[in-house]
Image (cartoon, rainbow, N blue to C red; front, side, top):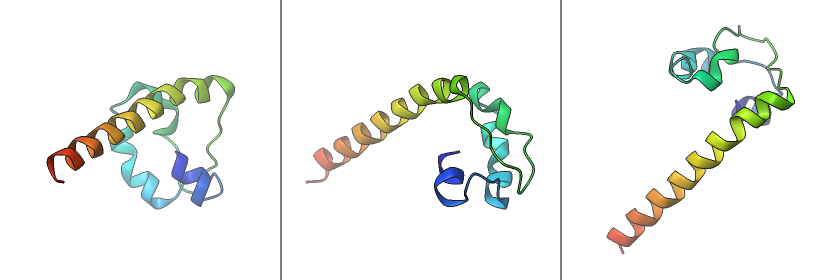
Length: 74
C-alpha cells in the first residue's frame, strides 16, 4: 500500500494486483484485495490507524534481523 502512494500516485497497478493473493491472508488488508487496476486506494483515519502498528512491527523485525545478521557476519 505504501508503494502505491509513494510511487503510483495512489492508484493500483498490475504489480499490486499480482500481490493481492498475499494480502488476502491478512485481515487488515481485506479492504485492498478486491481493488482493480487503476482504481485509487482510499485511506481513512481508521484504516491508517489499523495499518500503522503492523507496519511499525515489521520495520522493527527487519532492523532486528539485520542487526543479528551483522552480529553473525562481522
